[in-house]
Amino acid sequence: MTPLEQKLRERILRDGPIPVADYMAMALGDPDHGYYRHRDPLGGGGDFITAPEVSQVFGELIGLWCAVVWRQMGAPPRFRLVELGPGRGTLMADALRAARTVPDFLAAADIHLVETSEALRARQREALSGTDPAWQDTFDSVPEGPAIVVANEFFDALPVEQYVRSDTGWRLRCVGIDDASGALRFVEGEGKPENAGLPPTAAVGAIFERNPASMALARDIGARLAQSGGAALFIDYGHAESGIGETLQAVAHHRFHDTLAAPGEADLTAHVDFAALRTAAVEGGARAHGPIGQGTFLGRLGVETRTQALAGTASSNEADMLRSGCRRLVDPDQMGALFKALALTHADLPPPPGFEETAGDARCA
Ligand code: SAH
Image 1: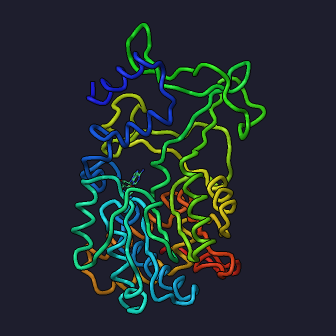
Image 2 (image 1 turned 90 degrees about the vertical axis):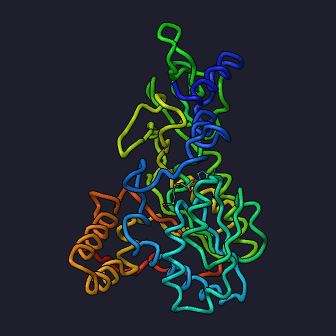
Image 3 (image 1 turned 120 degrees about the horizontal axis):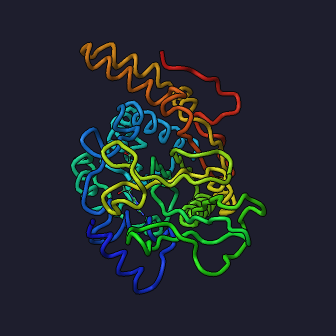
């Protein structure tokens, strides 16, 4: 039994079953035993790999995207360059390196990293040595002013609520303890939840997810952009339309696990509901663009050209890695379609790079 499971059991025995969102929040963020608190889960030796770790081109293209957006904003002399959940700091390091071609942009950027993990803050400090980022616990604490906000695989880690359909309506889905085996198991919560926002009809046993933490954050970011100017780019895996179905999953050592088996030892994520995220950001006052598939987005930004240019001067082994990395990011059977990009802007800005309605599509060879 993991130390966190012990803590969860004590809480369940004391207070009754725990809502799935609280379970997920504790599994990832418990100050003592949460998954993200004390480890670096990324990369081949860790639990999962993300786009910036697959290819340097990912972060480079996002850096240039930010520089173009900054020009579209009228090149403010000072702005907040914010990344939510920067992992190892790879995306930001690659972005800043690529943006050296736009020195005014770099000079104007005041970098803020929103990160709760001490272990990953240390990795970010190493990756970004030579720059002077500030760390924040939440987006709220990023100082006022125009902002460009980037988040890759961040929203999938925010706690998802689950509802299960019973024959008398929706019930909050919770984690309790099985009387017979003593193991953690999913149970229906007591009482009826507010029906607002829950689908009116569904088969008995159906599961519906929603993510109030993501919605609140998207609304705040939308309001911030509307008030102070700027843009945001969210890339994550998920669906373009809201719908019924369970997507919460646990991954450890690059394999799927039972979501209740080892709390604190496995990564827990849920598909991002891009339709809901978009709606929340628009409610906040921003204009939304997309979502579009990650493959389409990176293709439009020139992932192929940049990959070939790098491969042309690399060893044959490195060139193979660059080309296979590009395919992995763009191929619809790999990360190209399941992963999506959503952009938000102040209403006065034009569509940002990659989101223009007339943009053509390109493919990785
Ligand atoms: N963006 C990185 C890392 C993705 S993993 C990449 O693409 O490689 C998720 C990241 O979000 C980690 O850095 C994790 O520590 C951070 N994180 C998770 N929940 C968070 C929260 N509630 N607040 C701030 N950071 C969080």
